[in-house]
Structures are given as structure tokens and as C-alpha cells.
Length: 67
Picture 1 (tube, rainbow, N blue to C red):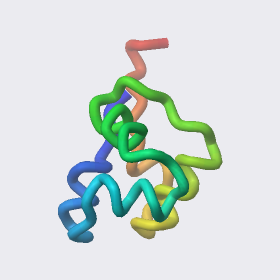
Picture 2 (cartoon, rainbow, N blue to C red):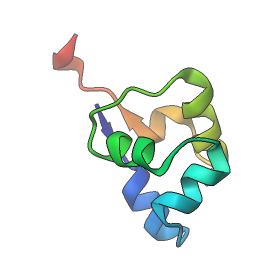
Picture 3 (cartoon, rainbow, N blue to C red):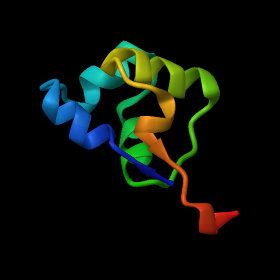
């Protein structure tokens, strides 16, 4: 899975720690999300999307070949 979190954080001038605090997770969780090494819960994906004012599917890009 790929994400646009890093790109959106830069656009909104947020650090990993600041985003983590806004969505109620540890900074390390944001690191793993950005690296594509962690699949978020629906609640976490929703909260991240809400922070950025984007749709979940516009932030988290699932590679069809991984199915």
C-alpha cells in the first residue's frame, strides 16, 4: 500500500509527531504508515483523512496487484 501522508503533511506543514497527536497514535505509527509497512484501521484512516480534508481512498492507494 502506498500513501500520500508525507506529501500531505508537507502541504499542511505538520510533523509526524503533530499528525500522530491529532489522530491519537504514536509517531512511529505515522512512520510505518508512510513507509507502507502498516495498514491502518478504518478509524485511523478516517481520522487521517479528516485532518487533511481528503477522502480515504485519495490518501491510501492500494496496489491492485497485491490482491
